[in-house]
Image (tube, rainbow, N blue to C red):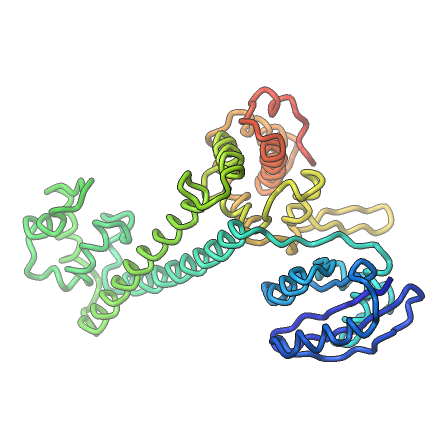
Amino acid sequence: MVYVGIDIAKRVHVCAILDESNTVVVKPFRFHNDAKGFKKLLVHIERLGLDASDILIGMEATGSLFENLYRHLKALEYPVVLLNPYQTSKFREMDTMKRVKNDNIDAVMIAALLKSGRFSKGYVSDEQLHSLRELYRHKESLSNQLKALKRNTQTILTVVFPELETVIRDPFSMTGLALLEKYPTAKHYEFASADRILKTFRGIQGNNFTQEKAQLLLDRAKASVYSGVAKEARALHIRMNIKQIRMLQTMLDETIEAMQALFSEEAPLKEEDKEVVSDIIDNLRTIPGVSDKTILALLAECGNLDRFHSAKALVGYLGLYPTLDESGEKSRSGKLAKRGAKLAKKAIFLAAIAAIKHNEQMYTIYLKYRSRGKAKKEALIIVARKLIAIIYAIYTRNEPYDPVRVFTARPNT
């Protein structure tokens, strides 16, 4: 049996091969991340004269950089495992007793980790979940751009019309954007009237802007402390931001629709898979406080949840646990671990906030730990971990939410 360790990089990978006696039978060599490079790797492997069953190949799950090589080797029926970069890092430190890191050492350490057998396999999602992951991360990117634009616009508004927020709670709603587009600064209300302001909202569904509110807005604008300096330049800036905000919102809506379509009845699945996927998603939707956004975030970042041997393993993967600082007889819990699936962790934490508002059992658990002296955030983390346990149980059992079971179950602490 030989063990092939591959250190993954953007353009050039490094490979090393060990045998059963931990002897380096093929010294670390570099090969490019292209067809020619893949062929070079295979030449070295084939020279060993071994069957595929006598070869184990390992590589780190580094972003999506591993994907093409992983799928190429799998297509050739080589046994390949993905390794958590954190595992290989700790194994390297333990083996070398120091934090030494370079590509050659990493390749040898990956092969040695395979030889040791002390690793847990990584995971590659199927086409549906892989598509979801791409779309979800794109959605997060669009959301961050949208937030940045809104912050930038709000900063300008605090100068050009600081009194606006006393009348318009959300300047980025449909009515708010329509108003800003026509009257971007307080000085642009100079020749306006309450009737003209109301005309701005004609055709906007759900608009509840009244004559009284329009007059209040007009009075605040005319009494504004804004001096009018750079009025037109700032107005142009706001209007251009509004165009980008609308464009990004449209793109965001389209991306969310595409994500939801992956799990709709019309999704291009094998007939035998369609009913199972539909049931799982529908059952997860029965949990109060858990929205489609939460479900999509979890599946996008974690893949099929039944690949985890327990709910505790899923909690660990997400990083939903505090760091621990122990010294002598003292033991102190630190902040929430930075490791884990960041986007999914954020989604679950937000779901925990929603759950204590809409789920009586979760609220009971939250109050229980608050009464024991836990801080709000600590209690929310406990609720989030309980939520993960419920999601995991529903996913693996493919059955709807049962509040009785949740209420009597003991949450992870």
